[in-house]
Image (cartoon, rainbow over the protein chains, first blue to last red):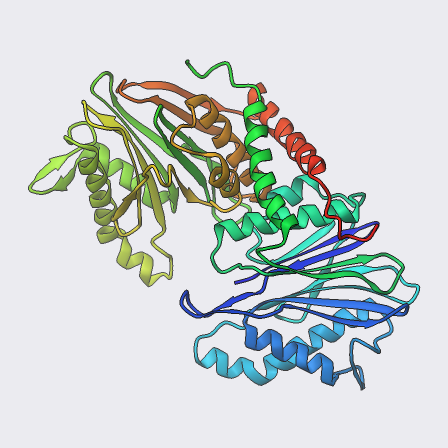
Length: 245
Length: 245
């Protein structure tokens, strides 16, 4: 499993992924699940993946080598819009499905992959997409300014309650880390280190890309601080007057 | 789906269930999922269920009419220990599986049921069990003083961080309601009203049984208060100094 989250904020994008892959519980590895194509000042396009690692690596490799879309071979470095970028990722997913799908199906293995694609090209708006295993996709909007892939349930309540388009990038980083921490605590197949990318809107360049390890003081502060905050918050809530003392 | 949670605290037990059942998204109903057998001063035994409603209702009906266990028919009103009560519930689950399992399997329907059984009999310790669809079961201990069935992921982070055996019954009610609220917000198949039972250890009588509706002022306070608390808590956390301003 995996957990990746993308926040779509007025100030920019916050993208966070874990790095654990597992086949069963006794074959655990560390693989980066975040890939970036950047032409500083012109485009910044980041792709995060969840699901079967062989599939998601094949998708990325096809994107680097070029994928056929509407009569021409494209990469994420030359598509003219983010919508085309999402179509290209979808086309790469379908190409992998065409190649590997029949054998996977014959062996009873699900074609399991999901991707987050965020970025900005030229003077167009920044966008954030989630691409499904069928190669189709949805887009984050102001109504739902975050998207998640992988093991998304544990980390969703804090996002539901706190993320709005007005959330700042700094607060977005906090919230993404809190959401990830809730997931790490509850699911063994999501693991450290983490890969974080912060993108400031209309800069077309990565503002921050950081690998966060167990030793990162700020992440330790989030882990301990958040637990303490939750305990203090529930204790501070008034008690129901109908529970007999 | 369903969400039920049981807290196993030194002061007693807190049991909470939702009441929604659904077959698809356009056939939604309200059914109580909490049943209680009480002989005041002698025993208090409560059963909460998740999964296929036909299965869980059949289990409860069998328990009321009597289930064969070790050469005799028993109900939850006459088993001598909580361990026997858990065995009896398991035997009821297996009896339903023997009756309905083959046809369900032939029609491709999973035999999906899970139950929480909490209570105390005579001078023996209170206990809390989770019974699986195979009729076997596990028990809450001081190391993990809560058990969940149904849609458990959204509501687990707060329990992981805050519930200890020393948690008071009043705080346990708060935490169970917070956990339920997180689940209600994220999963349409979990719905109001809620059924709450509070049991104070060594009383062998229900301390409180309450149906909590949308109009219940305290639950509304929990919903709004908790969202506000979370927002205040993350805003109060220091910001990472490595996010460029």
